[in-house]
Length: 451
Image 1 (cartoon, rainbow, N blue to C red):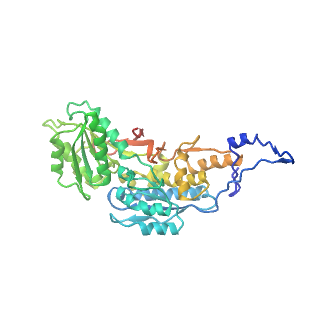
Image 2: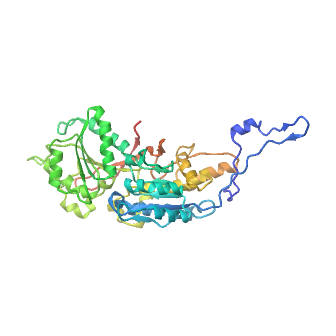
Image 3: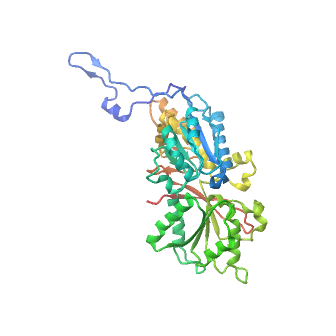
């Protein structure tokens, strides 16, 4: 039976029950029995949860902006229209603020969010933008759920987050360890020495962080980064020069960050390795980041790419298997996602749902309460997969004067947060391409942050 708002009462904890001898009374020496103290009822707040959102239309964030915005809105629709909102109110998702230029001052925007009642903000911006916004977010006391950043600069000692920031995607330390282990385990006689890596990336905090973490992992293990090439803007510059820099001393593994702008480089690299028989004479695996993991056969550049130029490539995107339900949800909004993919849409949908579940867990909509509750809703005893199911577990327990903890397994699949509130355990999908450079189905695999 569902409970009416403000009628939820939490039962006494086991420790209190023990101390009170399960309801026994105490007696004064000179008077009648005194009843034990009773717990004050905990009620749902008569306050709507208001969530703000910030994205960007440039760089890595720009490539997933539409997918993130759509998934957030779909989560809002599900919570409010399918499951009757939260605490007797609709959960409000404020109009999305999109950053148009690097370096934009977000402090006035955050003040407007706070004045509108927002206590949580979901972000999909780059590391530099998030770092610059944190002082204003901390001052406003907002819980921050970030779906995109992975650079370790966000977690430097100079960045004060007041324990309000949670990140849902694997960080560069985790990714660097995966790349490095692949390079260290290389045994191909057509690739470079085991443990050697080449990197091509946009010149961003995320790319620089990946280089640093690769070096930190490889150097003590007799590995090294042979070449690190960074580029500005949307193009990678002289493609042939980039190819020559990699082939001058071939690595055991090539890591390519960035997005579809890297496709001409990958095509030229493939052709440069072919011998007279048309087969590669030098062959080493390539690892592509999330925004480069797209279906190139559907893109305008398809006819300019060499066949099989991605045959040695493996791409990844954070999150577990893309379910039919999630895919249909996205495609019902736009068929363009067949080309651009669903990267970070699972994180966006789950971020909204997690904010609502954290409020239900804490019986509060304050930013500090939400941030504190977010790790707890991922590791409880009762596994549940959507907002309604999870909320029902918590409310049913309270109805019978008990408590219950939930383990939310949403669109991302399994996720646990570490001590720093970054993803410690989770899932990601690995992709390969066909001879026609068509993206194959993703295969979900687990990850765990290195100790």
